[in-house]
Length: 264
Ligand SMILES: [Zn+2]
Image (cartoon, rainbow, N blue to C red; front, side, top):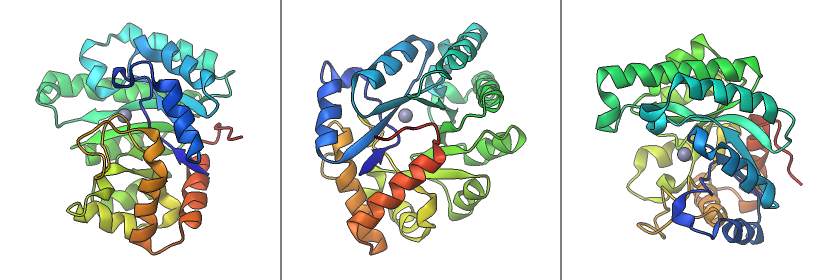
């Protein structure tokens, strides 16, 4: 059994195929798909989608790319919806939250500050409800690490990990897992492939980030959660391990990172 720890199954790129995509992934052995929210407007959508597929769970949070249009009132809505969702067994984490210092619009000083404010406020909500976090970390590894040290959540996942070995070790020491996916399937991605091969297997979870970060054999096409077993096969090959061992270990790691997740 496989787990896709990060899939935007509600994204408009899937049109009306989201449920069919989940079923197709399930047919390929993907027993659970974690659907993160990105803004207040999609909170109920991810919750309903997770409930309507047999293999779904979800997170609630405000993604850094949606921070420019977000207000402090959105943080109050988030906190209230998290409080209500604690009753929902399909609700597993705060996310997607983080810092994006790559997109030019988001790197102006005032916007950096706003991103940091939203990140910290969401870390506080994660702490209050003892929830893990799903983190978007783009050109912001050390800043993220600084803030999670100050306001440590109950672990979680640094999604689409693309940092150094030292940064990876720091996340691991702080109790986080690292998400690996399509980027690892490109032979030129030397650093990511080396980390995927050498980091402790217990620190690695798999993800698609679908519809984004397509694996090499799909690129530049739309990514989908049924790609997880083939992405897992790349990890197995890089580490010289049997496929079943990688499936079992990465699924166990995902359950460790997201303990509320109930896998049938
Ligand atoms: Zn994402």
